[in-house]
Length: 303
Image (tube, rainbow, N blue to C red):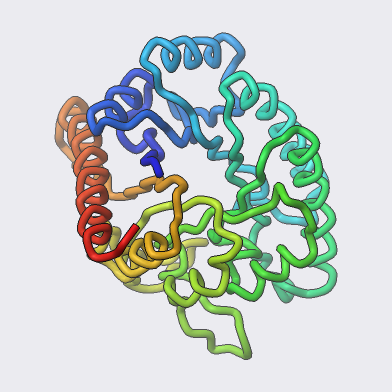
C-alpha cells in the first residue's frame, strides 16, 4: 500500500510537487500538470527536467493523469479522437522512461443533445475506447477508467457495461470517492437521484485497481458541466470515504491511495506568495489527515 496524489494542487513546479510529497514521507506523485501543462504535453526539454528532478529525489510518477477521452471530449468528434491518440502515443514512451504503469483515462463527455447512452453514442465510445485500451495493452500499460463526468460515470451500470464490452486485462478502474456526489444516477427514468459513492463502489469493487480520495457535499446544480460542490477534508463530506477505506482494508486492498483535495481557495487581494503557501499547506494537511483516517480504520480491522 502506498500514498500518492495530484501534487499540482500543492504547486505548479516539479520542485514544489516533490517537496510536498517528501514532506509527508511519500515517494509517489500522480502527475497531471507541471507548470500548468499536462505531463503528456510538456516539451521534451521540460520532460527531461522533470525526470532529472524525480531521479535526484527518489520520487516516482505512479500514474499519468491524462486528459484522454475526458469530460470535454465528444465521442463523435473524429478530430478530437485523433488528438487523444496523439496524446496517448506521446504518453507511452514517457511512461516507459519513468517506469509508470497506470494511465488515468475517461470515457468521453456526456452528450447533451442526444440520449447519452443511445446506440449511436455507445458505438463511438466502445470503438474508440477499445482501440486506446488495445494500444495500452500492447505497450504493457493499464488504462484506468475514472468514474468522472463521462459516459462511465452515468451510473455503475454504465461502468459495468464498458467493462463488459471492452475485454482486456489492461482495462480497469480508478474509483474516485467524491465524483458520485454531484452526479445524477442514470438508472431507470428521470428525474434521477444523485449517486451514492458507497453504492457505486460496491457495484464495481471487483474491478478497482486504484483509489482517488476526494470528498465533498452537493450544493446545487449550475448551468455549467459540473454542479456546485463544497469540497471537504476526507471523511467530512458525503463521499463515504471512511466506509470505503474500511471495506478496502477488510478486503486486503494493497494498492495506492491518491489524494485530490480540490480545496485550494484563491484569496482575492492577497499577495501571490501567501496564496501559493496556502495551496501548499492545504495539500500537506489533506494528505496528513487522510493518513490519520486510514490508520484509525486500520486499527479496527485485522489486516
